[in-house]
Length: 335
Image (cartoon, rainbow, N blue to C red):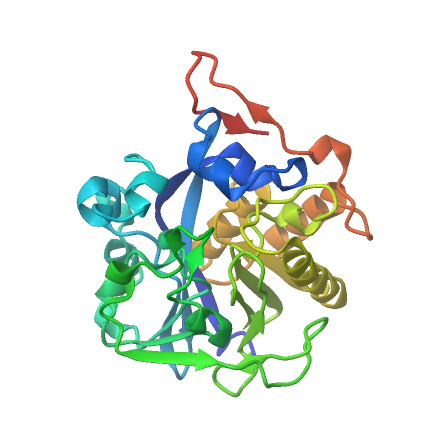
C-alpha cells in the first residue's frame, strides 16, 4: 500500500483518568485488585486515547471510544446502585468539553454517525464509556471478551457495565483463525487487505485485542491496555497490575516482544502512554494527519534503544519512579 492510499491512524484525546501508581507499575510488587479498590495513597493522571483509523475505501473506524461526560460529571448517577460506585472514585475521570469523543472526531471532519465500525480492545470503562454514541456501528472484539462480558472481575465488578453497552445491536465477535503474525498463532484481517490486522493479547482482560495497522512505510501496534506504556514491553522489570492470571498476560507481552523484534518499522501505540515516547508519537501523528514522520520515527527508535535492550530488559535509568506531591497530597507524577 503506497503512502497516498495508506491507512491513517489519528489519536483522539478523550480526557484522562486518575489511577493508583501501583496499578500502572506495581505488578512485580504484589499490587492486587483489592489494592486497586482500597489504595488511596499515591495517584497519577494518565491520558485516555481512542484512535480514529481512516481507511481509504472502508472509511472511518474507531478503536475504543474513551469515556463519556456522565462518567466524569455524574459519577454517582452513572454508577449508582452498582459496585462500581464504590470501586471507582468520584474524580476518577476528567473530560473537558473539547475532549469529548464527538468533539475530537469533529476536529478531523467526522461525526459519530460516520463511524461504521468500532473495535473494542476490551470492556473496561475508560475504553467503552462513549460507546452509546455509536448504536449504529458494528462493534468488533475478540470472542473471548464477548463471551466474558457478563463475568465479574474479582467476583465484584462486571467486565462490561450494562449501561455502557446497552445500545449495541451489532456485535461482531472474531475468532483469530487467520495466519500467524510474528509470535501470534492466529490473527483476524479486518478488511482482507492486511491494513488492519487484529491480534489476541489476553491477560489484562479475558479477550483483550490489539490491532496491527499499516501506515505506508510504518506499522503501528495499537495495544489498548495490553501494554500501558512502551516501557511495559520490559515485562520482567516493569509490570502493570493484573486481575487475571499473570502467565496469560506475560505470554501476550512475549508475543508482542517477538512482533516488535520481527518488524523494525513498528511503533507501539498504547492508550495511556504518558512517557515522552507516547507523547511524541501522539503529537507527530496529529501533526502529520495520521502518518508518522521520519524524524519522529528515528527519535522513537532511539528512545526504545535507551529504554530496554535486545532481550527487553529495562535500563535502570528508565525505571519508573513515583514523585510525591510536594504539597503533601495524594496526586503525584512519574519519572
